[in-house]
Amino acid sequence: MDTRSAIIEAAATLLAQSPSGDVSTRAVCEAAGVQQPVLYRLFGDKDGLLTATVDHVWDQYLGAKRAAEKSEDPLRDLRAGWDSHTAFALAHPNAYKLMFAPALRSVPEAAEEALRILREVLERLAAQGRLRMAPDAAARMVMTANTGVALSLITRPTLYPDASLSVLVRDAIHRAILLDPVADTTAHDARTAAATTLLSSLDELTPQPFTPAESGLLEQWLTQISKSDPTD
Amino acid sequence: MDTRSAIIEAAATLLAQSPSGDVSTRAVCEAAGVQQPVLYRLFGDKDGLLTATVDHVWDQYLGAKRAAEKSEDPLRDLRAGWDSHTAFALAHPNAYKLMFAPALRSVPEAAEEALRILREVLERLAAQGRLRMAPDAAARMVMTANTGVALSLITRPTLYPDASLSVLVRDAIHRAILLDPVADTTAHDARTAAATTLLSSLDELTPQPFTPAESGLLEQWLTQISKSDPTD
DNA sequence: GAGTCCTGTTATCGTCGCTTACATGGATAC
DNA sequence: GTATCCATGTAAGCGACGATAACAGGACTC
Image (cartoon, rainbow over all chains, first blue to last red; front, side, top):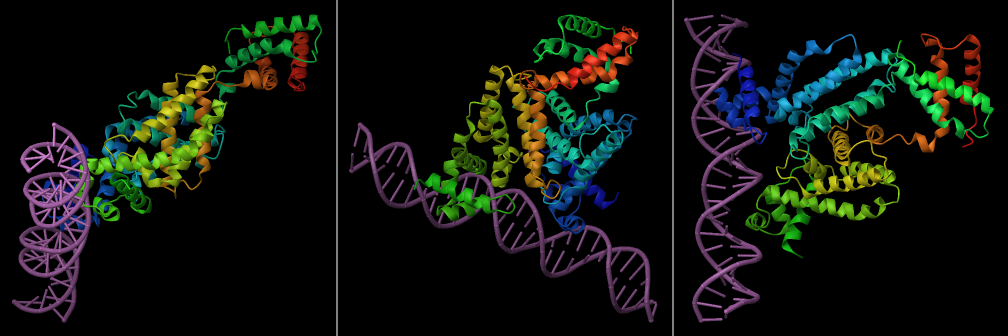
């Protein structure tokens, strides 16, 4: 095998097994069966090795997941992207910390690719007129919130023992960046809700524009709408 | 001065000045004018020193800010809490990384206190019936999202150059955990919105329950409501 | 005044990231 | 065929680090 690949493989294995989340270049070299100067000629320094290792782990994970994240519904893909981001963090906590925690001074390519994939999905949503803001701004909101949840889950499991937190924050952010799809997906719900709202606040209208007879009729109609069947 | 305080003070100064975000125990001891074994007897190990240092910096910051964050409006306090959290991260990036990044194995008291303060504010909101979920769950959502934004801002300034991102995520999360105060604050808006919604979807009703004459009258009334003045 | 504990010292250990200096082996130039 | 070069590997070591063992003085108790 390629020496470079052997070193990366050894580093990835040791990193995954490391309780502290750290690896020594000596241990990597011993596991790969080479001496330290080889590592330093190939990767420059420890940062370079770790960056390459993180990119390798990320590529492996992404190769297995990529197929599943390209449906015809960008909203579905947006949710799947968030969930797989969180899943990657839980599956490879040490590699994830290196990707998004401030340990490395150079940003791994993997971190930028994650942001790029996210932005692509958001641009598809924007093309459908479902985005409340520019894809760039939305991508930053989603990515920062997602990394915050993922880092908290893997570094403070006692404080954040429930992974469903991820879905809660996900939907909160998504609701904020997406336009409410009420009109086309649940027109019936929107209509009954509107009728109910009007019914409950009609008599607060000042000055009251309707005669008692008109109000009675209007309320009767609104009640009829609010109780209509979801036939559409 | 107390030796312990002198060491913490020296560590805090060196930490704030450190470009890498790391400090060596040797440098701290030299700056404090003591030998290493003193440090290790007082703090156990380097982790203990850094934890104490982070708590010290946090206490200093909190002392200056605490007064301003206890108004009679818990929502105002909730926003102020988020903003001051982000401000602390930007003002003390290295200390903040130690607080919320996975570097330390022991959770600093400061991190738990931040969560406790947040939970108190949320419990006041819950007491007013303005919270959509349990204060604990809401606190976790707010805290994880806030740390994600703050960490991104201080560790990837090139990717996230605009601090207004913090406010965007803040309001997104707050909208998700808080009940919409539409009912009591903007009843007029809710009514006009409901009338507008009904107007736009009335003719989609199947089966159409109204005669053409009824529909015409209903639409006239709804239009009247949707254009009413906000007199309430 | 002997014992004890607190506080400080000197000197050193093992590990770390990283580098210098040197060896080997195969492709290329003449 | 030989000389040159360079890519690739090794052996040994440097300086800095976190952490510790062993010891020394001083205040206090009894």
